[in-house]
Picture (cartoon, rainbow, N blue to C red):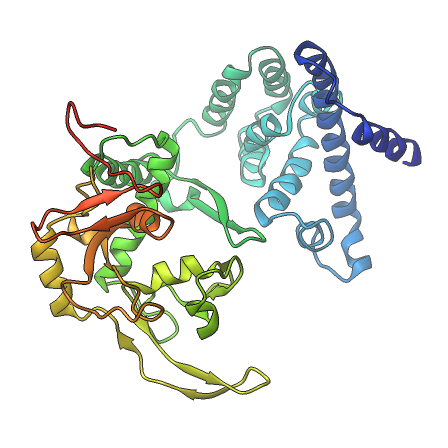
Length: 401
């Protein structure tokens, strides 16, 4: 281990500034193979730790919890690594390719689906020998990576020729991992029908409004549509109660931070424990309920004021009637996707909640306006949008700038 650490330290300290493309690629290829082999060694060690109950030595029940607490891994990564280690005991050819760096951890995760406890039980019940499939999985992973899924599907079909059980919920999975900066990532597995429903719902939002000049990737469009789908559902008020209240975005911020336009990151905290900047909190507060809470020097509540809706229903209806859709140039997002933005911020700039001080903005462009862009409605009643440099965004064959 000391030799390995010394080799890693030497690699980390190498100066790459004078190394050019071909040489960098020559360096990268063996590094990737070594990385995969190291992950394989970690996977095998974790499996042995699990088999011998090593986590109990540190007072923990499982290796998943040990990896999360001691190695600072995300829940999904820890669960996948442990699952890979269990599956590899039944897939020796795949394990060998993994150990030599020829098969990646991602490929192991795909192949591991044929060796879950449920699939192993099916194999034993039907007298199916996974040995032959193991060789095919390893061969596909090394020589024809695109075919690996095909081999996995052949194995699953052999284990369950009648197809999946009628209840589609048995195979559905959704895992969400929260990171240190409050952002989240995750993965989901859905049956064909459930996946079709999700795709149809997201596609309806993606296609409903495609503003000119939209340079988002398809992945970004899908992510924005997913957030918008949740936003629509939260705004509808039809979701079940959560801790005695309708579920909603909760943001807590000190009054000084809310008023100070220069305040940076980590000024506010959400209900699920993420942190955000004061700018993001001000954006969220544009169209929200606000509660005043007075704290003592130790941070304990002394007085909690009644929640006040910043944009009453009658003001929102008037803004929707006037603006019809998001007022940012080139966007036609419908009213039910939009927040009511205070042109002059209600607290910092003492802006009132009125029709004249309000603008309808979708989430994407509401964020833009709180980060340098500007929308204005002169006396002629036509909204105009300006970039952070002061230039106006114009639309038309000869007007695009």
